[in-house]
Picture 1 (tube, rainbow, N blue to C red):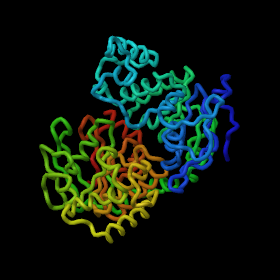
Picture 2 (tube, one colour):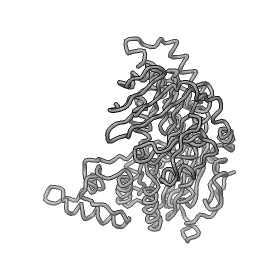
Picture 3 (cartoon, one colour):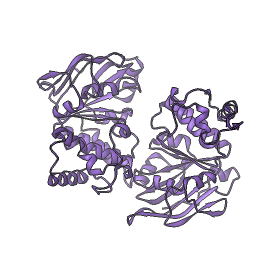
Picture 4 (cartoon, rainbow, N blue to C red):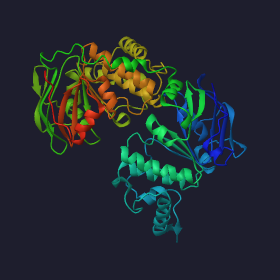
Length: 523
């Protein structure tokens, strides 16, 4: 039931009129509705979370507001007057600014140059760099961002670059700031830094739209939220008057019983007396990973836990041959050798899904089918094209098995939601029938429904005998799925535990260095 009569925090502070009101918005692509009669109200001086699964319509709603997409029906009202934003420039001129998950700035320019790109102060026919630095410094100071405006943007961590992108967005007198997954690559301290800036902007009357899949963060920073499902409005609620469970129900229409069932499924059928299908002996790379031993058995999920920079990803890349080890060895079944390349790993029935989905996975301008079949084609060699009948059969099989939407083999990857892109990448590797599947952050940045499906898939693959190496920053997820947990710290393996009543607190103690190391008792 839609709850559009709830008094917002902005109303409670005396601001009764929304700065933006979207009424009855409908958009369809090729006759398929993406939004169906959706309303959204944004009040000045509040953080408004836009919630929903991937494919629920969040991105379409944002693009309708920012002039990227034309609206089929419905109206956008700004300060009581109906508007038609024909382009992003028209939306920005009206005071609506957007900062996307992928930072679209120029890393080899300075902070100030990025903030004032296209709006540089000029003097005597050229750019007045001193004035530009002063203007950027004043804007950064107002937001409480401590960074040298004359420093090169690329020299700063992602979190600082994100803040600079926000500073650029509000420096154009933005009244509405849209933040699309701004915390997906940030650690806890960096998230708090971002939230501090958001609170400052909110206190100055900016209406902030916050899109995130992290429920804890949404409940910490937002005042109100609108929930979408399958392109329709489910409800608008005050954050303080709802719960995470209720929001999950609104987003996916049911509780996560599937995830709960996974809790008791780990460890079944793993025979650690047999020869491991993958065995690393002193595997490492100078400056990247200390010598590491790791055994992975048939039908086992080995979880890799640790903080950002702990060596999780470095280990995954060495196991697959994406990076070359300079010491140690890797044994795949009975063959002990260095993997010379990812293609060599694929031939040995290893598969690796990178955490960097955009740069190392998705090829946006190719179709869903072409993306799905890349690994199989690489294993066959480019002189042996996959027969058309086999292509059709495999693509249809995995679209159905993974519930990929839209179920159109010819859809461009760029038009799929993040969760569906991730499913295509998993299908790419499953088609190769791997013995070992290495997954680095396979559920990061995707919605709860898709996350549940992918976690269930991992459990099912292990039951079928596939050995899985599973990496996630979410410790609950690692513990839910893993039979055994390896903990990394400072680019080194510091502990390995069987997942028998292991808790998040136990893993955190190990990461913090306050718990002793233990190897599995039956390893």
